[in-house]
Image 1 (cartoon, rainbow, N blue to C red):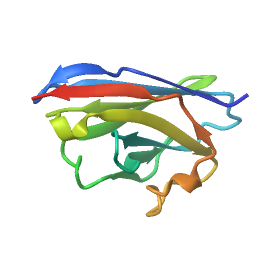
Image 2: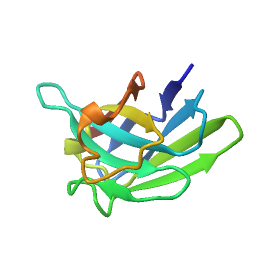
Image 3: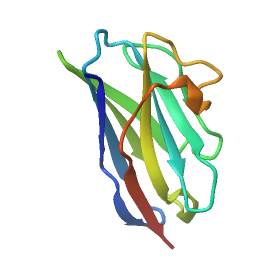
Length: 129
């Protein structure tokens, strides 16, 4: 059974850093387009960025470029994608969700949530000014 498990959320002051993790298990291959989305209260869900595990294009929303960075760790049965979030701003506060689709490279439509067929449970990020 395919599963995404997120971790790493928390509270931080503006200017601080957090690292989110999304561990994907149950996939046949290690080539997965994995993305992070976020949703703040009263706001639309928005894409933060996506990366194709095992090599491929990485995309970031303009609002996080230069501050957020993807990395990955591929093990035998689990693929983990990390999102290092630096220079956090109060506007970054939201519930962050990991999403994935196997066997399909990330593309310019990476921010379309309909591309992904598996979602994590979410992890809260709070940034105080």
